[in-house]
Image: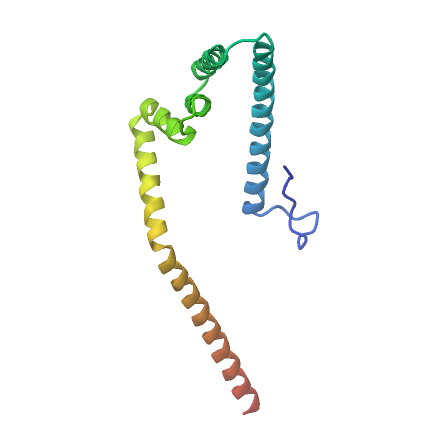
Length: 161
């Protein structure tokens, strides 16, 4: 992943804007998490390759993967449990997203459940309202352009008078 750079309009002595700083922090966090996941997945692949190389059956490999994912889920927090549930569901041919969401829902506190429900409702409302919001946004730009043009005409009228 690439890191964000300050905009070219700023000199080297000025500070970053909040959005640029947030972007840089978010980019760094995603890079660190991606590297950790990549290392962990490489270790799992090596272990599974060793088991597969010993002519183990598919059920043996799935059993070993399930045991490993159970250990990962127990040793981590809520996010790690959800990730392990998603990977396990994918290995068994089920939907990983629904399994991860179920895991978070069952292990979550009432505040987590409320946040999940609120975000789902907000997403549905946003999808329903987005065409309306787009029209309102475009109308605002038309009003801004009309006001700008009216001011320009008034300035020209004052300059010629």
